Image 1 (cartoon, one colour):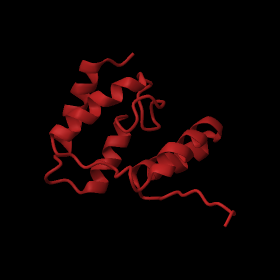
Image 2 (cartoon, helix red, strand yellow; image 1 turned 180 degrees about the vertical axis):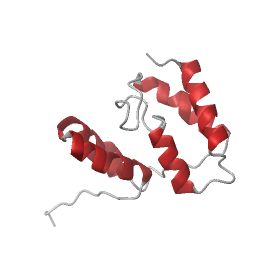
Image 3 (cartoon, helix red, strand yellow; image 1 turned 45 degrees about the vertical axis):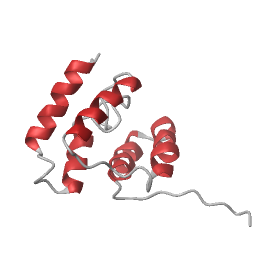
Image 4 (cartoon, rainbow, N blue to C red; image 1 turned 30 degrees about the vertical axis):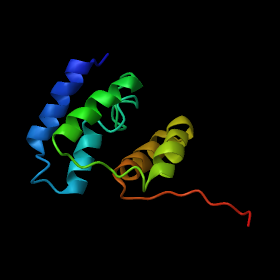
Length: 117
């Protein structure tokens, strides 16, 4: 199981390899996903580390303190909050690999459409 100190160390390793001040925003977000620091409670290889969800705050605080970019969840909230959990729960391994990373990074923006006027 991944603990807070291990997550801090992994976050520092990410920041050392991809300094926020000199790394392209999208490249940083891709690297963050690949390091398992996107949503730590997701499975390893899919943006997470199989860690308790509460530990995401540890990663987020370290990244914010370093001035790292985020994925602008206000703009991609439907994808993060609705589509990603659905893909994770019901998608095949191929579907998960195809959609989760670009969805989290913001390379693809998902929305919810309604047919009601």
